Image 1 (cartoon, rainbow, N blue to C red):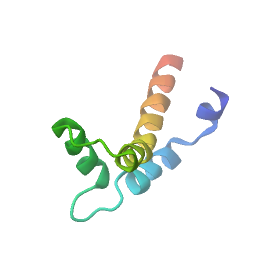
Image 2: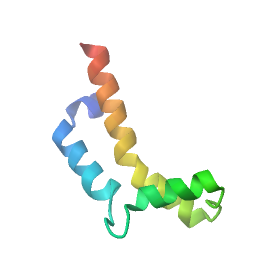
Image 3: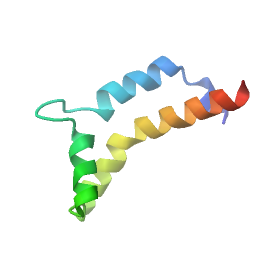
Length: 72
């Protein structure tokens, strides 16, 4: 938890806006992968890895916000 506490929230938000949403056009990559997941088309290992990679900053942000709320 010390690593999570030491990360500045601005850095995590920046990671969400860059890695999490890249590439931006024609639509954010994570959105495309989430649509594939809902449709049941997310079956290739590379697509699953891609979803995990692009979702990681958002999971980190959620953990950081939850930890921050728990401490207050």
